[in-house]
Image (cartoon, rainbow, N blue to C red; front, side, top):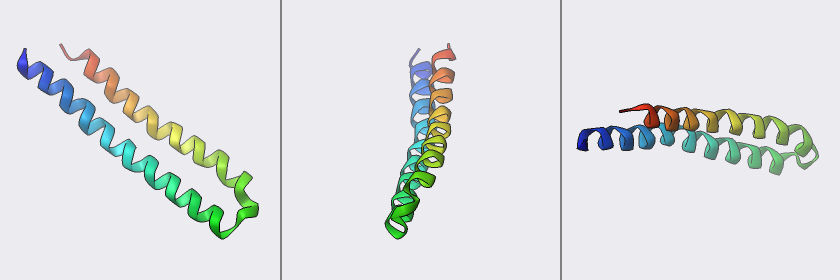
Length: 70
């Protein structure tokens, strides 16, 4: 039982690190691009949100896998 809880915790921790770093980098680069060219905000915002959603989906997959560990 203890090893199952450890496996679930590690799945969430490791599965959340990558998307967290990815979303941070996406936001940082988007803000940098908007700072360099404020007129392009509309063109930058939609791809930034899409990329963030895809990165967040990876974390959700890790959560689903953690729930499926028995």
